[in-house]
Amino acid sequence: MGVKEALNWMDRHHRHKGNYPYSMVRRNGNPGYDCSSAVYYALIAGGVLPKNTPIGNTETLFKLKGKYLDEIYDYKDVRAGDIFIRGGEGRSAGANGHTGMFYKKDGIIHSNYSNNGISYNDNKSFIGYFLDRRRSSNERYFRPRYGGANGLDIAPVKRQKPQKSSGKKFIKNEKWHGITQTACHVRADASTNSAIVATYPMGARINYDSVYEADGYRWISYIGNSGKRRYVAYRRTSGNTRAWITF
Image (tube, rainbow, N blue to C red; front, side, top):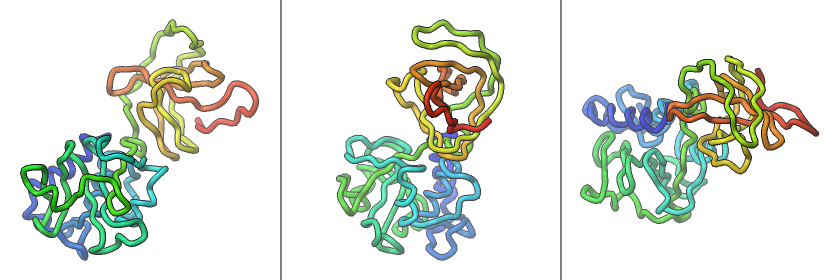
């Protein structure tokens, strides 16, 4: 699950746009979508939101910040898979707001009244009609935490040989899974100084194949779809050792 699946959902409904007209009333695919329902369905397809998530609006999208969305504070940092929300928080409901997804920098895919369905708009096709491309109280950008609800950067688990690595102590091979009790960062190495490559939200399932200790934490580890080994800390090794992942 990830950016590709979210954008594929948008693209599939764009290609069959005639079957999915823009509608603010019948907005759950019967027959069409409005801007926010399309974004909600795409985020579910991308694994950001659980499958049983109620389909909300621009105001409820704002409320996903910190759990399923991270705010982007400069337009220059926007990339494919990010979303925009037009209309100030607290006053974007109904026709006062608009939302959609970036499929590239300066390119959006979104359900809109002007095109009577899901359309692509970029520098060659009137993106300036929909976006200022400048962050303000009226236009904000968010990065979804892709894959968190349905598995993130996960390949089928397989038994791994102990790895030799400075600063990491191999504990055991263990083909199992855990459920996050809070948001948990996925890191490129078993260190809190290592790059965060993704984040699981609360309630996500993590399949793993081995356990390590490093940097004052116990870590579970797996090989992601990228082919690279990933690490998630689940408790401290001293002091308060209460785990934030249950097994």
